[in-house]
Image (cartoon, rainbow, N blue to C red; front, side, top):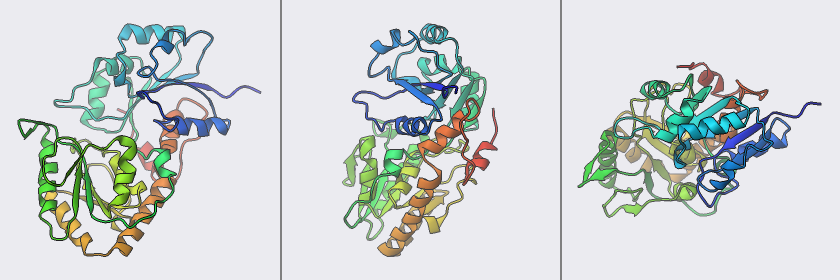
Length: 346
């Protein structure tokens, strides 16, 4: 019997690397099921492993995870792939780029060698990645990490409103236009009667500011709140939303966020704890209404959202979606994934 295909996973994790970091748990689940074999490196954590990697390794696919944390040069990428036997390459680009946030050379080095780039945003983002060298750019949404989706409930009564998101400023002026809307939203929330507001992230100076939150702590921060709020950058990018949206739903909390284009597949609504709004004013008004709804209803709505995310929108679903076109890996067929797959290729 032939062995399952071998995937070399080039992780972007920095030390210390958790066994639950970026797709590692999803790969373990696929490996345990006999779907594939998995080998991985984290160049930012252990760059010395790159030089000896190719000895005896012939992967059927190289899966590259947002490569900006290691200074890849094009000659390095070309040399590594040549030594590995020139396997197909899939790149997952989990960040949004554009405007003042410019692509880095290490991203472009991998895009130019990729058979497919999977992007968490379409439209201008997909065109940017294609021009940078991606032969084909396809959509994959931001999803919940398995470690968050599978985390048990925590005791305690949640309270208040948590807004999670940074402000990039210079001399107090927002450098990203969407951050101005985020600032207006925070100001409106702070003036709401009965809103016990906590604002997490860099760049905030108000009495509600709680400072930045490490990624691994975001689930806990959101669980301590009764209502969570987000306002995304790159609002004109079809299909894009921050991974804080699925994390908030994983937390089992009602989430109020900005509405982005082409999210019809995200067929959740207020009854499932997700409130997508068109302006900071509308978002603040919705939070005002939710504050009066009572914790029992809000927690029930949030529980339905959590169940949906755990069933349909995790790293395992996204990984199967990305690998299915290249390896005998079953693509997700339920929930939103047929609609996601139909969004096409740039």
